[in-house]
Image (cartoon, rainbow, N blue to C red):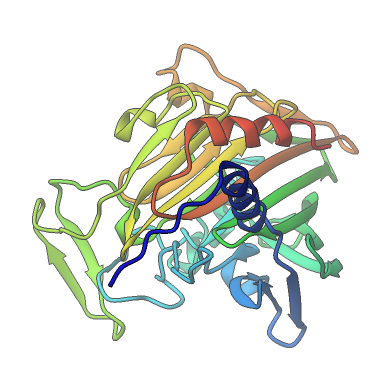
Length: 349
């Protein structure tokens, strides 16, 4: 026999307030360093969130992999830990990273193990030499110092980055503040590939009719004919209402990608900061899984109508701030919620 329980209106209000309060409760963040492996594991609410990897072998420091609060891995596994059906294009797309295609003529963005030795002199490295802080709490703090160098280890830029990690039962937030100080005169020449990049899990790609290349855990490569890959179901939405592939090359204060992974909706949003150069950023958001914010790629994004080089004299510096929100649950995070988060983030210094 079923019974119905009728609550007084006041009790319903209290229950709703309790539910909202519980849903927004901050979970504790713990950082576990391993100096030998040159990595720091980040846990939120006792569950793996990501790892900060900084060995010189991967040409730049990265956060990899990234998990949603329910444990789902939202970044591509390849090349470090390929999963079945992972695309194998662009081996330099690894987790979440920050670099640029043309700094004094050196390409920091495209450098990877796949570049032939005889061409490595055309590429730059970002080498982390100091972890400055690793603190636990409701906000986990990780800060580090790195050098942007050429093949001869000559330093072009000194990077100081501070991460703040936080989370609730259904959400993970990464705030990144990066200061780049010039050790010599430096020119960021307007280019397509930059600046904050994220490579998405296969499911969050936009469905396509083009042929796709995949690998299994043993490295076997398979070509899947266009239109037959039924795994991708993602799409983009910007703060200006641009959707899908139309998000690419447009400006906005935020952009999110969202789709189904298992039974849940997963969304990843990147939020720009009003004090960043060339705000609001252009979105280098590709259907095949590259999700990037690039304020320094104006020339290609405007079809040559304008360009935006960034010049730093020796001793000068520039600061970039970005927020990344990973959300999971029955429905995707709304534009209204993202606007509220962007408003709060805009006050962050």
